[in-house]
Image 1: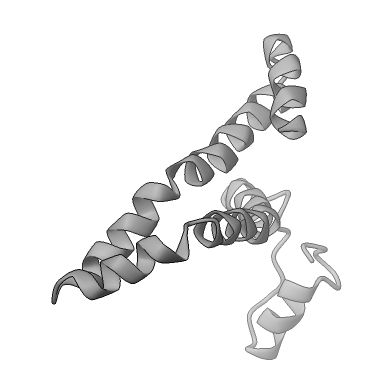
Image 2: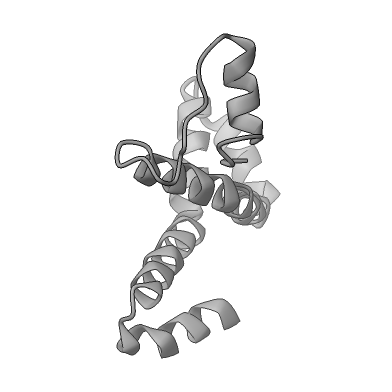
Length: 118
């Protein structure tokens, strides 16, 4: 994807007449390129966890919120978000622990294995 000579991104840039970029060797582009790859990797996983959390909310609660009042849609969204809080916090905490462990912090290794197990 980031290969300077024949990578996918440089191919598409070349279609528009933009010269190829050495993504991982450029001081200006290395960090954004790594961040993009990391976000690309984690976004589907986090979306799946949030979807599972939202589906675990009881249908009776959502039906009651829909029938409750005219502002029920707003209440329903707030209800789903507040009930989904444990699922929202977990992926972010695991990613922070993984980043600290990847940077060589030895105290994070047991926490990382615990995070991956749960």
